[in-house]
Length: 239
Image 1: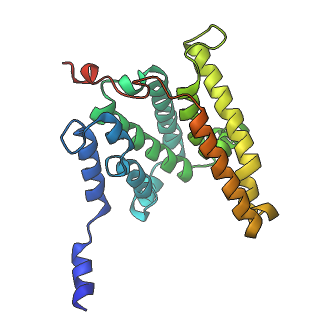
Image 2: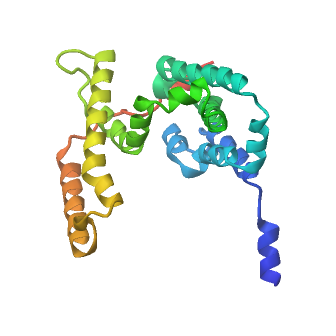
Image 3: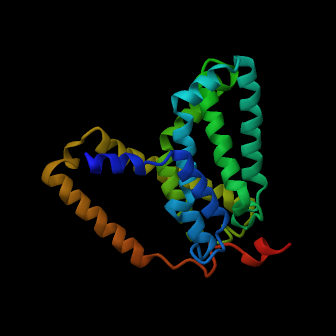
C-alpha cells in the first residue's frame, strides 16, 4: 500500500515532461546536451513532438476542437498546411537559425493542431483533400519513406548527372519513394499480413539473412562527407 501511494505521488503530468523536453531542446548548447545532433536525435529533447500528438488525442482537446465550426476548421487547416509547407521549402535545413530556438516545436505544434482539426472535420474541404488518393498513398509509405530519406540524402552524390541543387533534391525524393515502395511491398506488407516465410523457422532465417545484408551494406557503402548532416554552430550562434 505504501509503495502504491509512493508511485501515485511520483506521477507527473505529461505537460511537465513536454515542457522539460522543449527546454532541453532549446538549451542544446548546454553541457548536458553537447551538440545540435544530440538535441535533434535525443528522445528526451524531442519527446515534445510525441507528447503534442498524444495531447491532441486527449478527451479535453477533442472537446475543445469540437467547438470549432467546419468552415473555420477548413480555413485554419489551409493556413497551417501552407505554413508547414512554406517552412519546409524555405528553411535552410539544419542550418536554419530558428530551428533550435522554437522552430521545430512550432512545426510539431502546427502539425498536431492540423491533425486534430482534420480528425474533427473529415468531410470538410481540407479533410477530403487530405483523404484523397495521393495523400493516402504517401501516408501508406510514410514510415518506409522516413527510414529511407536520410541515408539516400547522405549517400547521394552532390551532383547527379552533372546537376545539383533542386535537381538533386528531386532525384533524392524519387529514389526514396521508390525504395520505400519496394520495402513496403517486399517486407512490411508480407510481415504485416503474416506471409509464410515471415513466421516460424523461415522467419528467423529471413531475419538472419536481412541482418547479414544490412551488415554487408554498412561495410560497403562509403562514409558520408565530414560534416554531413551537422549544424553550422557559428551560424546558429551569430547575433
